[in-house]
Image 1 (cartoon, rainbow, N blue to C red):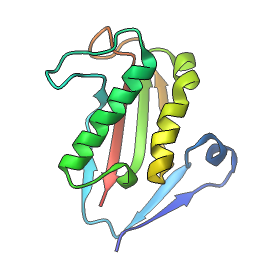
Image 2 (tube, one colour):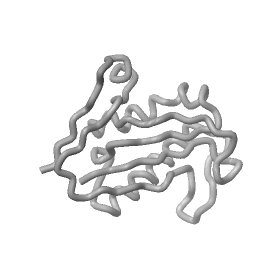
Image 3 (spheres, helix red, strand yellow):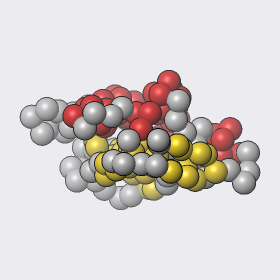
Length: 132
C-alpha cells in the first residue's frame, strides 16, 4: 500500500504551498517525468511572452504524461520549477498552487532561475517525479 507522508520541520513552507520533504513508502511504480514546458502537440513553443499561459500549458502537458502512465497530479511527490523570470513566476505561482492544491498535493522541489530554456520563447519548465 502506497503511503506518502509530508515532512516539515517548519510551517513556513506549508504556508507557501510546498512540503520540505515527502516520505514515500510502499511505492511499486515510480515515474520520472522530463521537464514539461509550453509546447504544442506538434512540438512547437506556444504562448511566447505570456508566462501565465505557459504555466497552464506546462501543467496540461505534465498531466498528459501522468495520464499516459495511469497517474494524475495527486501522484507527484517532487516537482522542480525552472524559469527565466523568478519574479514573474512568483506573481503567477497561484496557477501552480491551485492545480496542485486541487489534486491534494504540496510536493517538495526547487525553484530555479535560469538564463534560458530549450527554446528562447520558453519561460517555464516543470520537472516532476510521481509514484503509484
